[in-house]
Amino acid sequence: MANCAWSDRVLQLLRRMNNFHLPGSCRASCCRFEVNGAQVGWIPPHVASLLTRYPEVFSPPRDGAVSLCHSLDSYGRRSEAVDAVLQTLRREDSLSCLKGWRDEKYSVMPKFSDPPLMWMERAATSLFGVKRYGVHINGYIVSDSGEVSMWLARRSPTKQTYPGLLDNLAAGGLAAGVGVKQTLVKECQEEACIPAAIAEKAHPVSTVSYTYEEEDGVFAEGQFVFDLELPLDFKPRIGDGEVQDFYLLPIDKVKELLATDDFKPNCAMVVLDFLMRHSFIDPDTEPCYQEFVAGLHQTLE
Image (cartoon, rainbow, N blue to C red; front, side, top):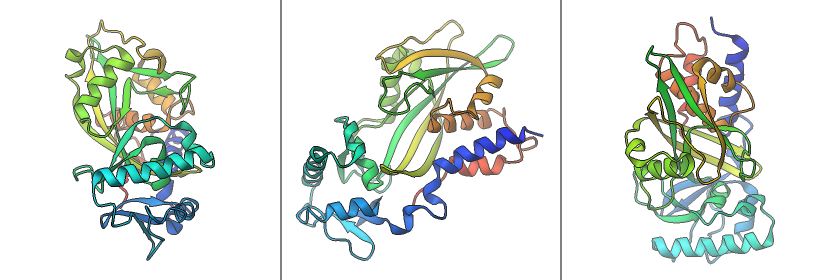
């Protein structure tokens, strides 16, 4: 049987990353965020009360929902009006997440396949609980004897979020108007100096979805997961400074680290997905196998 302490730690991780779905979360008191009649997020109560100061942009809460005003009837008008409000709130310095302003535009839509209704500054997305998407790449090698080892990155100590923790080989958020494969190639080049000719061989294999709440709001995220088998003689190099080091580790060591506080939580989920898909964790020996699968694919309605 699997190590019960290890399984318990992984379950704790999955519960933490899906705590918005658990009893006692703020979900019951959140307002739906609606744009053009479609729900695109969840607004926590403290944010909804702030938005009442901007009636020309946000309608007052009604029937459990906050909507953009009908006069904001285009992608551009919605985006610019909301951004002006966020810039004002940023200057007031009352919302801690806006201190991490990135000047990155994220698309806002009900589902990934839907046309975007507007864009929003990345740092503000948790205030509205809008879905954020990203790309994560599992880099690994297979030795001549068939043993699998995985490349992990350690985040720079100067990163805004989760400084110094273990990360996937490369990863990044999906900016408005930028495709999944384009983001993959870009992040591989920028973070790990992986040439496009190698990065483009990555295979889309899965998605990992979760929703959690913190002081900064609601984080609803979906990650597109890719596997990239690297040449045995290839070594990633530090690129844009977001990484301080790379490690090539045997799978047993990776699995051990997964249940520690040394991993960035969502990256640990991506690695867990890799271990399960490649049969390093299987249902005959892992009693929490089904719970793991469910925790990796929690969608927000």
